[in-house]
Length: 212
Image 1 (cartoon, rainbow, N blue to C red):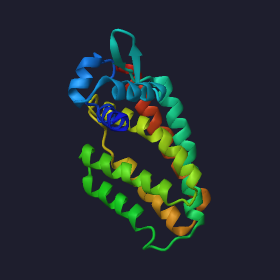
Image 2 (cartoon, rainbow, N blue to C red):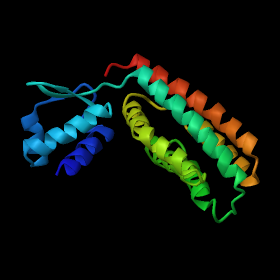
Image 3 (cartoon, helix red, strand yellow):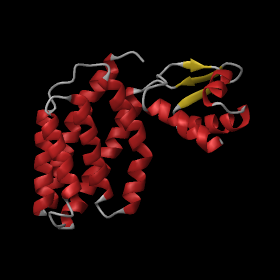
Image 4 (cartoon, one colour):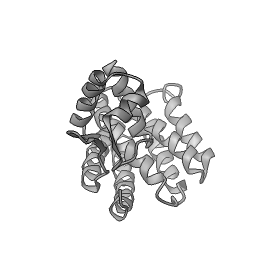
């Protein structure tokens, strides 16, 4: 039951259904999840240790606000790890068929055009494939430790802004895919670092100007 509570609360936070800064009483959560307090408290303690919320004795819990500083640190880690994944994947010299999941994500981004919600789904699929296909299990596990928090930032910023056209980003992804397909590991890593640095800078500006 505690695992069930953990997964459901984590989903609500990641999907921005429980908003940063929102405060909830323990009774509200037990009623919402239809379970007793004990498994709920175990789940809350786990989520607090992962930085999703803060337990306030006798006052319930508060969903932790998004921090521009924390988000910047997470994106620095992800950028470095994903650039390494791009390098390793290019070195593997996989066939066109083996690289199909990565190319399909790019095709979906191109088809989405300026439809930011559809584009964002394809973008997430691209980065997940990039990491899962690189051949380094420990790198993949480390990325997954941070990706949920990074996706939480992405979802929050989507509702805060009129997103600029993602077509330039799509072109970056196409170029990265072509470098991987050609086995050009050095270019793949450089392209990824260049693109993610620009994306991170734009994202953090939005976070710094927002009130959560």
